[in-house]
Length: 95
Image (cartoon, rainbow, N blue to C red; front, side):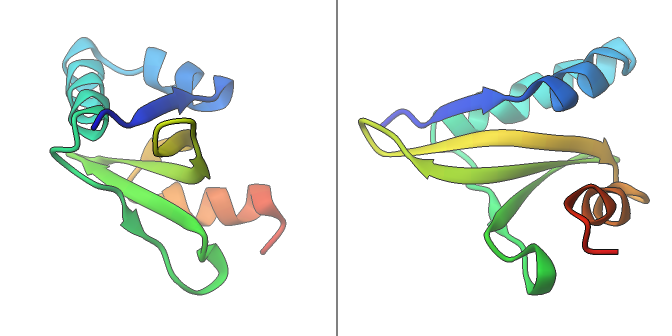
């Protein structure tokens, strides 16, 4: 079963600004999600309802929605590991 993955503009812009090797790893991770090779891990506490995918020094934050043929993930945020959760919480107005 293929899983649909959409990338929102904010995440796409961040990914495009990264070095070629990092973009390659992110694309490979997105492909692995669509193929069902990896499945995003659920986040907890105030970020309950969101999921994460680890890609080297980066984290992708996703939301799951029902799709026509199964789950559909939307990448809503991407950032370096050391800042991702704090920045995403600020965007959501949790901090």
